Image (tube, rainbow, N blue to C red; front, side, top):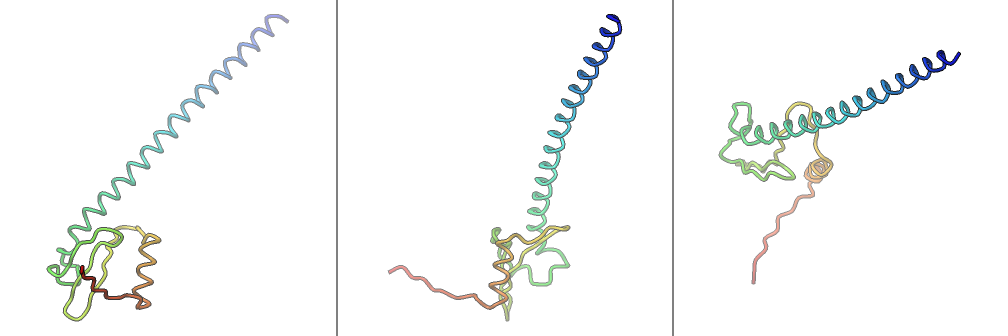
Length: 121
């Protein structure tokens, strides 16, 4: 009976050790996954920023690239065309407009855009 108790205690301790090691391994994998997701997002942002710099010079750009001026944030830029001024935001892949960009789009679409001339006296 004593040997059986010792064997069972050893098995239970062994199982606890295996569970503890697997839990530790799982935590390491979770942390690695978190780092990889951050790295992927960071690379996507860098790719998008690089693309923004090149997009006005691509054949698919619908305006004259000489008329485009980069702003960077919160929108990419403005194209000063002969008969219009066009606010431009470049997106790649499945990226979406930010909350601030949607607000700017909505203000422009509802014609809540003004011209102000400010002079220092």
